[in-house]
Length: 499
Image (tube, rainbow, N blue to C red; front, top):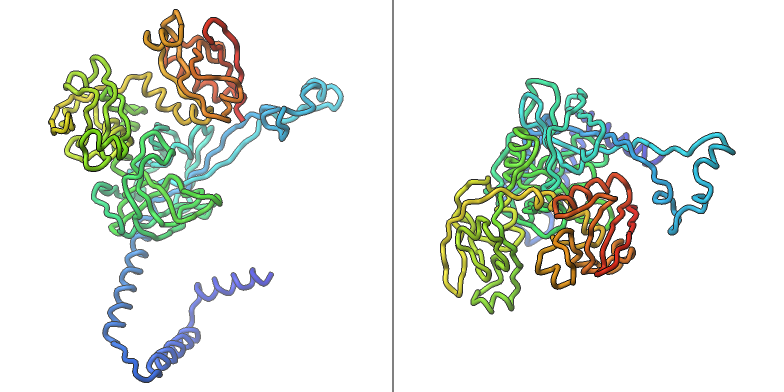
């Protein structure tokens, strides 16, 4: 009760200032100024103090103006999903429920009802309007698998939204509502941002609508975070919490320079590190989603490896920067351009390449058919190559979307090549071979091992990576995965329950 009264008084004080309170504050500040002059031997430069206060007030006013300008274009996104209760997987028993023996028919017969199998799950996030006719940007993870999406505008109006397209690999989604003359948030240029610049994060953390936090750009070009397949994150210390996902990161010009996506946390809440997708990446993906509903990515056709200090010295480099080419696919754009194993790609389309993740993102965002100049280090000498970027094969695109799922299972897989078939003693050339199993992972607990050949997923034959990726995607909905694997001359089924 004391807290409630204090809260009300604070709101009342802020919301209803009066002359009496103003005069009290004036007296306080007068007293403060007298106290500052009191100590002997100290002198103050009132002009410098006034300039400092003036500068702080101008910055404060700038934050307020940006929030006022951007706020009307930021929306609250509410999603509804129908979830299916899967019995033992939902029970707090490590080996299943002790009531599984009886089954649901037992309870229906003797107690006259079934336990509910379906239930509605509500979720919420943020988004921002990019066109007057109702196109809205948000995160894929906010609306993924949603049965219904509602959007609430800053003015209180609510609309049912249509999902135009989603891209799990970058975590970008586009929504559309049936409205006109909406407030729009202009999109800036994330390539021009600098570390240390002031930014505002606007969204709906914990369902608290139109919340503004202020911070700086802490770093840019963050990759290897493990959030999405293609990472080039802006890092900020502006407070981002659950519910901010999909909201804009705004500069002092009132432009969106990023989409708030994730936080680093050990507590579940803000700990000073937040990540936003650069708006230039979002622009490229959004344009394709609106036009075609899907994203077509560029393809180079190489296997690349991260450089460490020892490798860098072995190749005559001063520092471990760039991407080391270990394989070049036959007939690929890279092969046609003359790229060879052992080449180190240090520059792509006029931009320096720092690491593998950065190059993957650069290539993926390049429209197929584009001619690009690359600088490589070959035997200690710089060489310029021109490559025409191809279209990412569908099997690779499908597997990219399943990478995170495979990590959770603890599996690494590759297509079965004649070389691998000979190495592991298989007389077939179809299937997907397991090349790695993480210790303690669900795959390891189920008995899967490197060298096993996956021939079926949930009774669907998988002859290549494309079929494997499709079958794997369907397994997420089924709640369990049934593999038919071959271990040399023997076959067996392996089931993994998804919890």
